[in-house]
Amino acid sequence: MFDNSPLLHDPEPSSNIPRLQDQNKPLTIIYSPLCENPETLLRSLLSQTPPPYQLTVPLDDLLGSRKRPNGTIPSPKNAFMIYRIDLSARLRQIVPEMTVGEVSGLASQAWKHQSQSVLQFFEVMSMVAKQRHRILTTSPTPPTTISNSQTKPQTSLTSTPPTLPTPLTTPLTPFIPFTPPTPFIPSPTPILNSSEDNLDWIRYNSPEGF
Image (tube, rainbow, N blue to C red; front, side, top):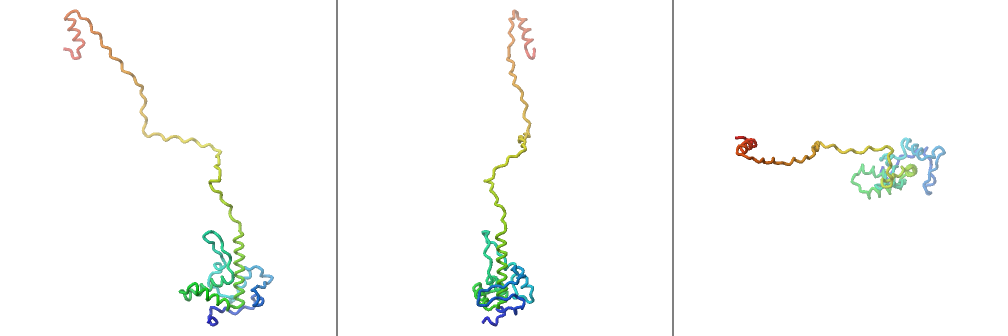
């Protein structure tokens, strides 16, 4: 079923790809003295024409590890996980309605049919993913910020001028001291001896006269 599928076969391996050990032994890459860095070896493999495997997903997306919502970084992907992610993207371009289970089953069977050059290619990619993950997790973290409740207020060296009250918009009424009224003292009634004196007194004290 899978032997005739173009998805299960890779281009013919190039002669300058570093050889692998016996296929029955665990997959181990024999490094060249000039290619001990996985990043350098991966660039060398990708520069071949054609490359060992035509990727569908961008390289950084395959090798990167996105942070979880809680801030932790997941473990780096192994060779098969990287292959399955890329094959899943290719299959969904051809058959978009494929389920996750169907893609996983097909990827598991297709992985067994890949040549040693393809297996080596994805093994190098997993080594680069581990190296990037190690650099990411061992990078210095920013210092922990102390909360405001643990910090003491700092005393300012410069004195702050006092806050003046806001002036009133309506002026105050000036204070007028209270002066008590002068008590009324009636004039003493003179003792008149004659009628003419009484008449003169009335004319003098009458407000309108008569």
